[in-house]
Length: 215
Image (cartoon, rainbow, N blue to C red; front, side):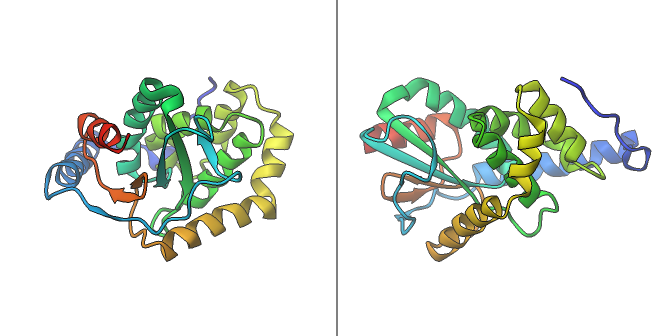
């Protein structure tokens, strides 16, 4: 994969990078390991034909995740979701919904990039790349060269990729899903719905247990 060189203005010095990492780790630890997991009836719309999903439409259980590609907590969840998708196969349908946060500079453009990849049949592959390399594009002056390098590595048609990312129809999908999420009570990312219940699993084992109970 071609990796763009970072702009010199965003190069990090050692001490500052270390401090930033420690703060991030502390925040992540606080998020994942304090308090009881939420467990409330969900008002999120049920999965439909227009959703981006992995797993059969007639699976006995659906898991919906509202997510933001620039959210560090969502990046923590991404490998958990991947392991669960591999484990449950045809038993569980995993649905991804866009919920870009206004506090993240590149949340919307990264959502557009993911949807453009979806239109060429590579959503989950782009999903994984965006989360795996979140730090490099999220801290750049311009994430577009990084997004292009990911698209190239997936064999996407770049002209179509750019056209789809810029299309009003793509913006409409993202804004509709975000608005529906807000109306359903989504307040942060990741926001997870297992069956008809909004939950906040903090580990693979907890997530796995909740799925098994729902099945």
